[in-house]
Length: 350
Image (cartoon, rainbow, N blue to C red):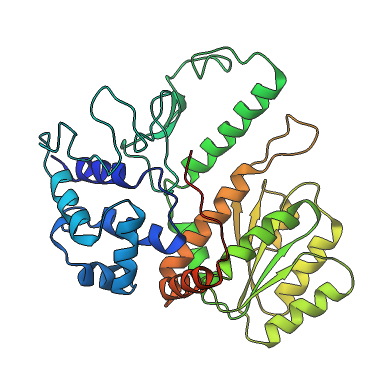
């Protein structure tokens, strides 16, 4: 069995479970070390993932195991290609999975076939990203040659379906862009090193900036959201630079307010490196940005849809987690605080 096979079978254990951000990082760590994971102690996993040993235990129980020893036994089964003997269940079955021919709470793939679980890891099939009945390949939605209304094996009967289809095509553009992750990774390192980190988004882009800032604050010690224009905006940019900021992240979505260019000019004048997530290569934005990352928006509905820019923002956050010392510890500290305060209502994944 190849390394890709081992990773794919390990992903099966994690799909569909509603894990915390800190637990997702542990899952990523195990998948990245799929060959060694079945032989690692909980202490060794904790050291690799940059978390405490109790966090690894909580991760195992979140997956439905009684503790880490039971999870490790299952990982060893996953490492074997042949079927296990656990009551007829396959090696990569999880607690609660049904036997062949049955449906159980662990059967998270559903009747529709393939799917991507809530863990947020890459799809188990090399070279393709699961999207229900369709798959993304190098040439777009597969199978190749299918017309725009045939891509899902069914007819796109109305404009609403065609709008969704167009947005999926935008995600395909982003998928192709990330074939070379180096530019995005370099941008993430630049943002991670900035203390504080100002995040700019005006008008239509304000929601993207606010969501990014909300999650970034869980791993970065000082994030400053700039989502209101006016004469104070340049002041706030200059204050961030005076406090030690080295970079600014900008979300720029149509229709672009004219004061956005003024804000970027102020950032450049203050000595900040500007990383811009934009819907296109608008010349003025390119001239005022040190790094311009493009993710198209959908235009089939009355108002633009911005799934691709949102996903690109999450990709930047993922790479910032790798670049920020102590990011995993901050995630863990937040989860402990949230649990002690009863901050969230835990809900099972449907």
